[in-house]
Image (cartoon, rainbow, N blue to C red; front, side, top):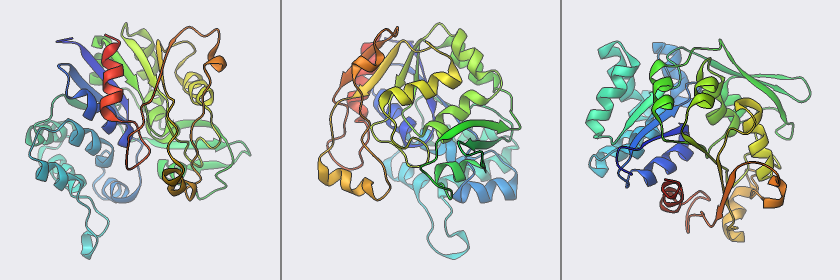
Length: 315
């Protein structure tokens, strides 16, 4: 297992979950994250300083951190009053490093040193991009945050997404895919966190050409406005529509249904448990790893240790 290169593609809490579990194993970790984020604190900093979105890389940096817990927690601290209201300390810190060094990548490198990260965090592109979506009724939605938190009718399916401008793949991301032994895609918001990575010119081809074992981790819950009423098969079909058919060697599915009291909290957000029957995948050429991956308490997400154990078993 030593010297094995594991690349995790996505963004947000899904990537955080995978990385925090895999960090306990002797593998070389790389997180490739989307640069389409344009909401909240990140939006303001992008507009004012013209930088790439710090909020996209922050969760991955924290997941890989071996710094004292207080410092890692500080990177997640959000101001709730004054002129900094709504801003996240980690976002401000990465912005300050970018201004100081004149490079977003150099800022990530220095932030990584401070947080003593075990691995590396790589933007999928170094160009400013914007996510655009077309709904099934023909309406165009501009911006990742408007896809992520719909102001439109969230029951409408997303017909198509693209980046404006398309952006070119970060050479470091391309190299990481080429040198990978295992590539993990997901879990996470399909249209706003995961797929924007593959919309960047050169990423899809680099992923397909990689000789690594490729794994898709299916979400446990749907997301209103993005994957409303999706089953496991719907998630996979959507991924393959943008990345290519038959690209995955393994599919990871959760079998454990959360108790009703935990689901109730999600009903307000119109999220649903993702159902999946192996028969739906009959005739498709990949291995299904189907187990209880559910966290015992808290948010309905994958348990980092259970997930990491399954991923490492592929080696």
